[in-house]
Length: 262
Image 1 (spheres, one colour):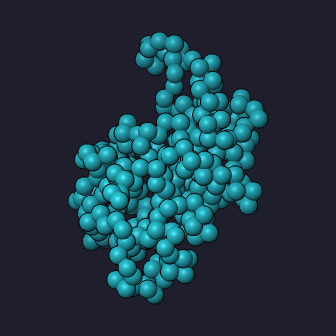
Image 2 (cartoon, helix red, strand yellow):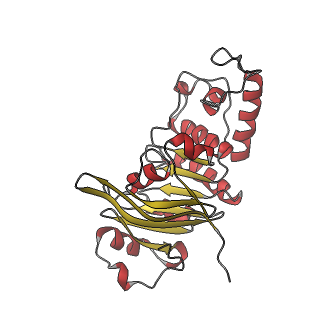
């Protein structure tokens, strides 16, 4: 059976900071509708990888393809224009603005264009924001409430709903539940499962292996600046993934994964 086409395909992605090799010849692929996890110790190259594929930084070498077409991102705005939305741990929210204003932050709707003097169409933004929240299963009782007064889970849900509302190709979530309690974590995970049912491709960076095995189709293991293995979730287990992360298991001793991007 022919595998589904890759939404994202990366070959030989490399980033060095002087003599420090943060990422070396990383190869990665993500199929249409697939959810994948990136795992590894601190300093393994995960954050560098995300910064490179979202245009936050430029690689020293390598190729990034979206739907089979090479792209070169010079800024996060370039990635957003290609339909890639990222929710970093900092969330990039404005605490003194309400839900709709945060969802449309940097994408404000106006009645007509007068540059910085353009009158904002608050009614349209509130209506479309409500639709985005409903589509992702996010429930915010008062849309006019400022995010400063919301819980960490509610803020995370707003950020994910914003990403889902604008993403045409891919959503990337960086440790989406790291600072959340049990109930809030469960809510965010339900939203991620809803994105899966909707067919939206997603990459999640997480240290929580229970979460990883519950949510994704494939796990990509980073170690010492390299992607050393990728395993289908149904064909591995937490002990094997921990062994790959720590170096206790040699990836060469495992059967070849179905997809080898390089």
